[in-house]
Length: 196
Image (cartoon, rainbow, N blue to C red; front, top):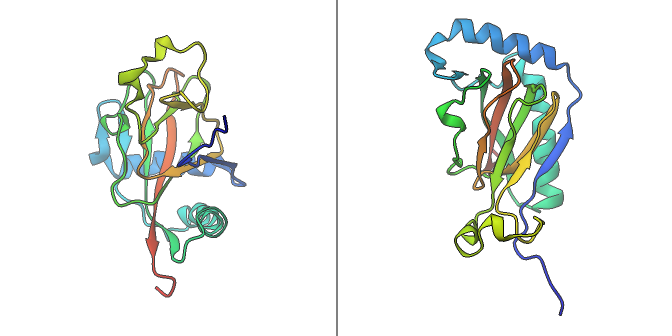
């Protein structure tokens, strides 16, 4: 019997060429300036100014990734443009409410850059859009997880990693057990007309 994989979901990974310490320092400074983002478990910034001198080089690298994904993977006739960004800082053993399972409505691709992700700082967990298999075959009834039967993908981040996945994929972050802050920058990319 021939078996085809229908409706595959891309998950992209790249080690960025930038100094993560720059982005840790920026996040920590911004947290002091924007204390309104403090909540149980950590802090979340307001939307970032994507043209700000510290943030702009990071956005430029992510935009290059968008351009490649748009033309080579998706073969889009529109531009995939970075439109929003914010910072999450999670304290050890806590979990921000916004790190529970969610998706990004109206967003084509989501990106996360890990400025500081020590060991045991919490996996990124992604669920497929067809996550109803758990109701038919509970995970404990599977001898081994693979691309065909897994109902979630756990990615263990490292400092300097950039990951990308479709905005319609449910995702969450596991609690940080590292004893240090996990600092990540999240970005959304949306479709825009080529001439805009």
